[in-house]
Length: 252
Image 1 (cartoon, rainbow, N blue to C red):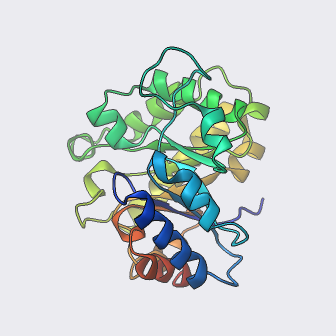
Image 2 (spheres, rainbow, N blue to C red):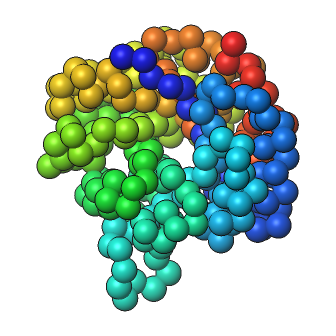
């Protein structure tokens, strides 16, 4: 099955609304005429409507960096799927390693959030990945197995069509380290086989699996040439529109 490539930028906790709007407008100008790959950027919550407005007509999508699993209620400080959708966003990142590390999110939280995202009409980007210690202890596959099976527990295949998975080796996020192409393909192939085992080959073959971990203009092409890499989740390099567009252009 053909899978449309996706290059997504996670702006994390950077940029005020004005800064985000300016960066989004510049990115839209730089990306004019580009239809492949699909591009998505995820600003902080307050900037979502500003960025969505700046990107109108550009073809570039917006996404949130998180959501709460309930649609409404007495949950001070949280943001729901319908609220995110109302800003014009169409994607949401779920289970990022920073959410797991700093905010104690578990696979149970990820599971609930994925269901809420789909119910709100959002495309979830489910993040998975192992720490450096887990890789050194050769636990990579067991960690990913747990994250995928628990994160997607009790779903039917027809309920998660369109799901995007992002493999982020935690030891390569913001460190300048990048997994070798052999390591990336091995893991991405394994993740696709996990999805096939849980939901069948048809869903697995259509699921986009992104790589995230110090993605830069000079390493994106070798990553995208891999059989089971369908795009990238870019962190720091996505904050600069000119640098980010080079990643898009360097796919080849």
